Image (cartoon, rainbow, N blue to C red):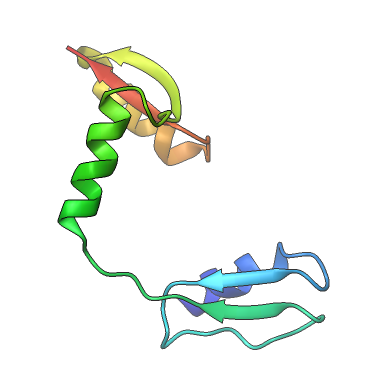
Length: 92
């Protein structure tokens, strides 16, 4: 895990900010980068609200592509290879 944080920190510009989600794995500050950590917790009601608002069209969903269900293996491989902003939606 430490290597991932080091790799992430290397991508931050000098004087920038790095925010992690693991309080026990905070990288050392370098090059004037501000380092912070946040904690997460499950919130079913909030997630349900966000999903309902997205389903109604109130909140936009970030979709990279829509693929037929029989191409699920291809979609899975594509997600593993790239870092696209958005997801593959499977269509029955």
